[in-house]
Structures are given as C-alpha cells and as structure tokens.
Length: 84
Image (cartoon, rainbow, N blue to C red; front, side):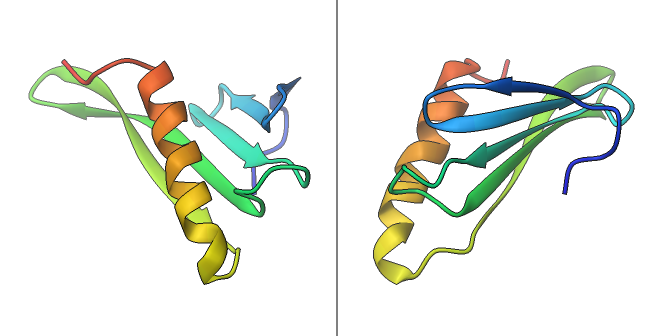
C-alpha cells in the first residue's frame, strides 16, 4: 500500500501515487481494465554512483488476467524510457 502523504493523480488505466518521502511511485490498476487488480511500484535505487528507477509489481488477477497485466506493466515501463 502506498505511504501516507502521497500525491494522487488519475489516469484512464491507473491511479498514480507519488510518494516523495520514500521516494516511490505506485500505479494501481483501475477496476475497468483487464489488468485489474494489480500494482506497480517504481522506486529509486543507486548503483555505481548512478540513480535508477527499479520496479516491483504484483497482480492479484487469475491466470487469464496475467497477459493483460504484463502488457500493462510493459506499457508503463516503456513510458518511462530505457535504463541508461
């Protein structure tokens, strides 16, 4: 679950919580999407003096919903650009 004092933003496929205190971004699927229910957590890590976004994700959907969740997760990742 997202931490307290996070900023909430609504998008067609998900609700985004920007939690500056962690820092992390939580993307929660919306009930009207095939990927629901699921969450992606994007957070900053440091490696070799560089900062990167890493990802944790979880789907609570049945087996039939998993391809939709993976597709949604890939769209979110692609929207953030490649790791450099």
